[in-house]
Amino acid sequence: MRCVNHQQNMARCNCSYEPCGRKGVCCECLHYHRQRRELPACYFSAAEERSYDRSLERFFKKAR
Image 1 (cartoon, rainbow, N blue to C red):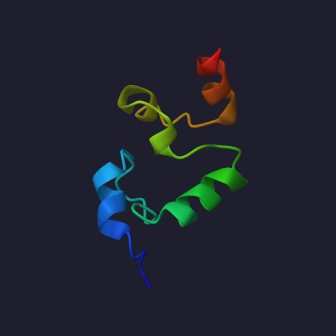
Image 2: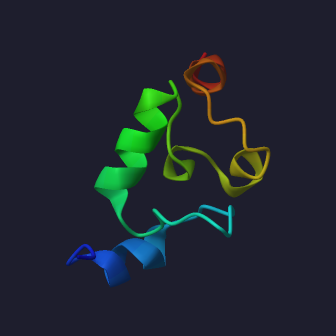
């Protein structure tokens, strides 16, 4: 079953990883990245997201 908010989520999703099966299903995306000590694409600018470095370290480094 797909997320009831799938269309709205897709309009805001900036993930550039095309084969991703979690696009538009934010709860699955958050869970996936959390297990890897990462954040989803939506926490980064478009330029930062394209590096595919979504680590917590990178996120906190830019916050300084």
